[in-house]
Structures are given as structure tokens and as C-alpha cells.
Image 1: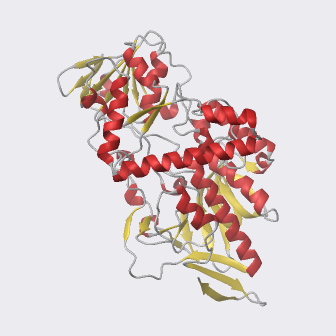
Image 2: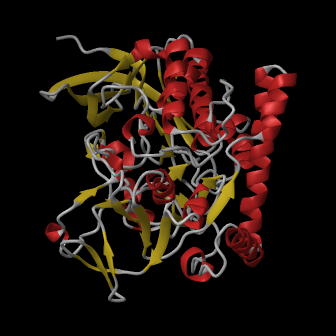
Image 3: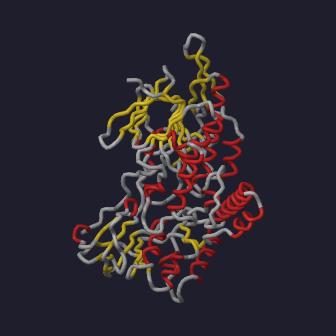
Length: 496
């Protein structure tokens, strides 16, 4: 049976995968490509997550694509709106015609002799094995496990007579109206769930082991809404996009250089939105500095409003055990509950869980260096779309897609068939690729590639620096290229 071959295979039809399809279509129109999607629908994260109130925690002027203006009034958008935006982009650009659904990629093997990847996927409910080949493999599946979220082992959970759910797989049949709900967690999912459920629940308690930084932001961008009425959509979008990028870069830089100043500012704005006498230090003052973990944003302070109106409250304590009627805390107090939501985080996974090998040798990602935040040392013709941890995901993914297209065009122009990042600098030292102290990062970061101490192996998490490197910088630095001579033999290795 003939095996389908493509110039580029994209894995994942979510926000970044659809963006990759667009950039390939427009910047490399001579390249054939297909998108392999494990699930049966476009959308990735925004199709998977269905819990109440699901929304972005970044503004849509930076989370949206650079090439497609976000035109809705809401800057902090709900999940269904983002899903519609991604699907409309795929439809309008004809990208959806190149998607193969229900193809879960499990393995990919590179052959230097053939200069191609052989990709193996499980197709459909019967998990039929399908093989495809490509010259370049582009992973756009993110870095967390879609199959399950992270749930700690809670003592006595089997004794609880109510219902326990994880937000990553929210059941359609759950009804929280008039019920007592406990949401375990302190991250973005928890601060989203609590005000959404509190609208109809009898009462909601957010139970956290330790606090996170929470910042109230407007759900609409006044400047954006005004500019759209005055300027062409793309121009207005571009202006607001850069305004938000620069504002966030300034905030992040200030957080790192003057954390005490930012801590006081954050505490002051939280205190102003809570009832008099509320223990801000216990519930909203973390032990770490701002941006040592990802910050939580709540549109129009909806979490604080739910607390202020008595529909929700905060408890900062450790879980001793689940009981028949709720949760017993280390302090001895007990929280009664009909429903317990374990918003306890995600499981990170390298490369979507795809097993890679190069010339018969399995790739150990943990021993690789991350090249420009998107390729792995010693792995040919391979890239991953990984967004920022301190800014909108799509900002970095757009740049990554542009760079991959530049690289492909450079290889085609010079007759190269293989490109491989190589570290030839013995002075390079390594560090974790993500420097967050968050539990979901620390549990799995040892499995990921490392970043290096110098460019192009260093990640700066800085959009302006990445524009200089990825949009305008050389595609030859620390890159080994291989071409074939007239007889087809491999020759002329070049290290930039």
C-alpha cells in the first residue's frame, strides 16, 4: 500500500496548528502539508476544555493570530468565542481541507539516508496503524497531556458520597445549581470556575494550599473598541497588539527587577475589592515573587465580586482527608460539599507523547538542548510550537511558524535536504527550559530539553528579542545543513 508523503506534517489542529497551516500556505505555497489531529474536531485546548466560565487568561489582541484581527468587543474572551475564531480561520483559509482527524501520532522515525520522517499514527476507534512520511515534522500539540489532568492522591476520596470531577474532562450531566461546591486549587482554572459556578450554586469554597497572585483586568479594551471605529481592522488590531505587548513586557520586567513594588501594588488592588477585614495576607499574598509562577487574571474582578457578595469564600489550608460529607482540613475544620472540583493542574508531556528516533536511536529529550525555543539539538528537520509562559501563547507561535517557513525556503533555495541544530560550544551550560516554581512545571520539567546559557540555546521569554532573532536573525547559526550531490550521495555538511 502506498504511503502518503508530504513536505511538512503538522501534529495538532489547535490554535498553533491552524496558525502553522496558514503560514505554510502563504509563505511556502509550493510545499505540501497535512495536519494530523488526535481528536475529532478543530480547536485543541479550546475544544477540550468545557468547564463553566472557561476563558483566555491573555487578551485576544495578543492571543489572536497576527494575520487575523480579533474584532469582538471582549478582550478577555470566553472559550466558545475563541473556538469559533480558530475554526473560522481554518475554514476561511482552507486549512480545514488539509486536516486528518482521529489520527493520534505515536511514533516518528528519522532516516538520514532518505532525509525523511516516517510517522506512525493510530486512526479511529479501532486504533488502526497508519503511516505517513514527510521531509519536515512540525509539532503543534502543546506541552500538556490531553488524556488526563493532574490529581493528587487524596486520602479517603472513595468515602466521599458526592461527586468529584476534574475540569479537564468536565461532564455534561453535572448540575451544581443549589449545591455546595468546593473547588480545590489556586490557579487560573480555579479562579475561573469559582465565580462561574457561584452564580447558581448554594455556595462555593475555593480551597487552596497556598495563594497565587490574582490581578483584576477589564474584559474589554476601550482603546481597541474606539480604534476599530476609526481605522481599518488590521491597522487597529496591530496598534492594540503592540500596545498590549509593550505594557505586559514592562509589567513583567518590573516584577522581576522590583518585586517588592509589584507585590505592594497587587496587594493594594486586591484589598480594595474585598470586604473590610478580609485576610488578604492569608489568601492572596503568595510566598514567592510575582511571575515566579504564572499570574492569574480575573476580568472585572469577578472572583472578588463573588466573595464580596457572599456567594463564595476562600480557605487556605491543607487537606487531611476526604470524608463522607466533604473535606477535613489539617486545621481540624471540615468543609461540607455536594460536589468537589479538583482544579489541581495539568500533566506536562514532551512533544505530545510522540516517541522520536533518529537513525534507529531513540531521542532522549531530557538530554537535548532547546534551539531558539523550538528545535532540539541533534534532531533533524523537526520543530515544536511552544508559546510563552509569561505572555500570550500565540505571540511566540506566530514567530516560530514564520521562522520554520524561512528555514524551509532557505533549504530549498540552497539545495539542502537536512538541517540539524548542533551545539559545538563547550562553554555552554544548561538550565531548565521553564524557570517557574509551579508544581505542574516542577513535576515534569526534568523530562524536557534544557536551555543553554547563550544564544541560540537561551530562552529569554521576550517578544522583542525573539522578533530580532526569529523574524530577522540568521537561520544558519549553530545549524548543520546537508545536501545531496548529483548522484544522491549525502555531502557538503555546513555548520553556520
